[in-house]
Amino acid sequence: MDQFFKLKEHGSNVRTEIMAGLTTFMTMAYILAVNPNILSAFGSGATGMDWTSVFLATALAGGIFTIAMGLFVNFPVALAPGMGLNAYFATVIMASQGKFTYQMALASVFISGIIFIILTVTKVRQMLLVAVPENLKHAITVGIGLFITIIGLKNSGIMTVAVEATKDIPAHKFTDVLSFETVIHMGSLKDPNVQLAIIGIILISVLMVLRVRGAILFGILLTTVAGLLMGQVDLKTLTSEKTTWVPDLSKLAFAHFDFAGIMNAGIITVIATFTFVELFDTFGTLVGTANRAGYMKNKEEGNRRVGKAMFVDAVGVSGGALLGTSTVTAYVESASGIAEGGRTGLTSVTTGVCFLLSLFLAPIAALIPGSATAAALVVVGLLMMQAIKEIDFQDFVVAIPAFLTIVLMPFTYNIANGISFGIFSYVVLATIANISGKSRYNVHWLMWVLAVLIVLRYILIGSEG
Image 1 (cartoon, rainbow, N blue to C red):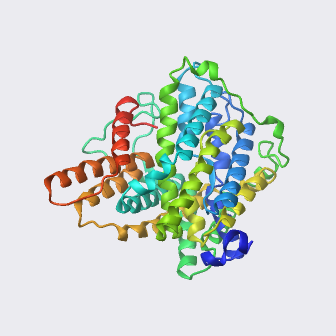
Image 2 (cartoon, one colour):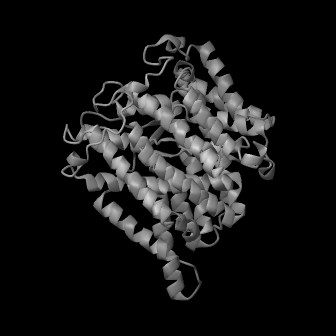
Image 3 (cartoon, one colour):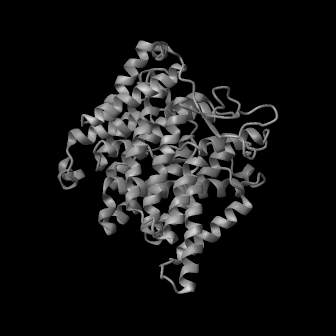
């Protein structure tokens, strides 16, 4: 393993990599329950998708493509069906009132994956690594850190929204925030979930201060024990019919595509949304995690490895659709394993194996409370914030785009929004600076192409998704 994964070369060892892989799995294992719930409309089957089928597809996709990332790229990043795009997937089906089926949605995801494979093979996606300025790359890392923190705070209940959906304001529709209104509130400290999350943050923080190896993983496990003592862990999941011990792979929704139906269902908009969001989400995740893992210190080697990772990610999109789930993508939660010292593909292989084992150990995986993983995400956000010191905030041409990138990711709850505003503003400001003759900034031609695509995206598709 040392020779295959080049452990010594990366300053790591087998124990560290396995611990890191377990940590990554623990922080993203929630997708095994969340994705089936969302795609099946919370178990009701309202989208036409079966909960068990989606669970099996989620576990297999996470296992197969994460292991592929480890073996073929030697990169400590895990893949699984992405949050956000799965909600969009289900929302499109639900809002169409039967006109757009899940078979059409899966076909859309499959097509977007083919587009990604073409863009990757032609090295268009890899050009982003050269085109995007260094300050913006660091801003992406910081923004993702804040985004991860928001996910943790939201999932734990520590952060709550001011106004929830009502009969007048349906879900996924938003109103303007007035001057006297606030967007978020502090959750109730009387809520056991909030209490457990705070306990988790404290436990992980203490272990990190004491420099305990595997602090995040052990913190999650200790928080789970605390949840058991508090009555927040339901042992009934061990015998639940929904979380069966023996997977029935015959329930997989293999290649249930409806290519004929999508031609008359406004498919261009749906495919464009899947493609655009995944393009920037994956780029941001891979660059952010590569920076965190130290790969970008050698830019040529770092760019090469991220380029190979993009290909595996592209194959994962179409492969996930074949298995019967929404867009598979690189996970920002991989940063938790990297924070534990994961530097090679052995971390990914470990995570992938855990996903495959979860096919048989679903009841045990389901025991881990959301508050435990939420606490880990909050702490990981802190670790990724460290990249902010690499940004030159004295140079407003790069500082303003970096700032917009950082704040819009968490505040709009969308990685693509942050990157879009960052790229567009950099192109505008750098061009103005160049014309004025006060400074000289390199604006890669691909940045111009992206700026135009960004404008068209928000004009034609809108800001949601």
